[in-house]
Amino acid sequence: MAQEVTFFIDLLTLEACMQILPNVPCVADASGKRAVQRCDFLGHIPFSDTSEGLFRSYLSPAYMASVKQVRTWMEEAGMHCRIDAAGNLIGRYEALTPNAPALLIGSHLDSVKNAGKYDGTLGVILGIEAIARFHAQQKRFPFAIEIIGFGDEEGSRFPVSMLTSRAVAGSLDTLPDVQDTQGTSIQQALQERGLDPACYLEAAYKPSQVLAYFEAHIEQGPVLESTGHAVGLVTSIAAQYRFKVTMKGMAGHAGTLPMHLRQDALAAAAEAICCIEKIAQSGPNDLVATVGQMSVKPGAPNIVPGWVEFSIDVRAGTEDVRNTAAETLTHALQEISQKRGVEMQLTLQHDLSATQCNPQLSNILAASIHTVTGQTAYPLVSGAGHDAMIMAALAPVCMLFIRCEKGISHNPAEAVQDQDVETALRVMCDFIQNIPSEKAI
Ligand code: GLV
Ligand code: MN
Ligand code: MN
Image 1 (tube, rainbow, N blue to C red):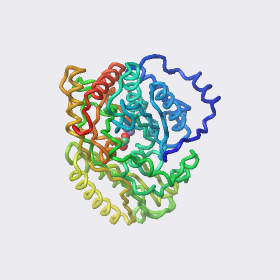
Image 2 (cartoon, protein in one colour):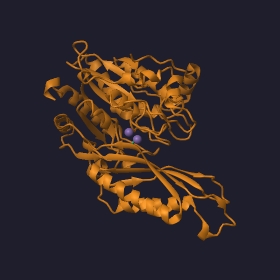
Image 3 (cartoon, helix red, strand yellow):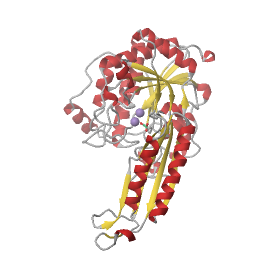
Image 4 (cartoon, protein in one colour):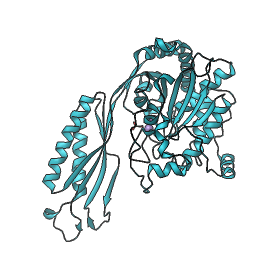
């Protein structure tokens, strides 16, 4: 059974923080504007673990505070809420008849470091706004609607990602044996929040409980802005690989070790990174590769670096393109390591297949986009990963993208227009009202 969590948030502190926060939600009725205000409200301490830039990682104090706050908004909107065995927040809006399968609407409440305020959170809050509108109109459907705030989409605490949607989709066999940078395991982090790691897989839904999965998300790219569309229709989501690379050379004295005798792990990594960039640049347009994380040891100005670890993130619209690039860069890194006398180990940490959105659901969503905006739905392939990729194993999925300013994301400058979010909310409400019975999807 999923279980309730005890929160360790000091209520006095929480209230004190809310009084000094500038962005307290002030619009009473459900709207795109209120959704934006709510995301802004969640963009600071105590809903961020850091005061400089938003950072909300899975099961952290800021994550728990956000779950508590979002839960009150879900309850106000007419939902019954629970925290599942993986720490996801789930609100259920009952169907006309009890125990009917549910349309799941989700996105994530965790964030990257120094994040924008809308990546993930906006999709959850928009789901709540849609329910609030239906509840105000006393409207119910033959299916239930469940809004899910997923806990770990980004993988910004543990070296795994999409962990909590995997649990919900039933595609996780065991809880990975990994630790965060402080040495805390997932198991310990769960226990700190009153969750039993042994029950983690109980977060899984049965396929018969689910009608479909829908996710609204900011585009995180510049296409909708450049084409003049407030919203877009996601047709598929790119395939992803994440690797960890370790290069081991020989640490030595920066003043005495001649250049030709060095086994400098960082110089090898630098050559590798430039090579990875070239491989991605010379591939098709949808191929991208990024080194975004690196540690250097011992890490002193007067020591030749003996050890380096870095990440590689490779994505493409198809697995073929991604896999070919991964093979090419593996060979290139092996050559560089050999030439420089450095030992290299490359480990695949994360493999997400490309995901197709469900054509029937997407047609319904496209019709709603047309009804609300008067424009033909603009199709987009998502380069960013989403919980929808994982949920596709459980149910048919579709996704709506919302224009964001200059396409900036994973950056505090992330911004959306209230009007665009209102458009997205209307599209969602129209879409939900047009979803047919289970058998028709
Ligand atoms: C998540 O934002 C990802 O695409 O890595
Ligand atoms: Mn993200
Ligand atoms: Mn996201």
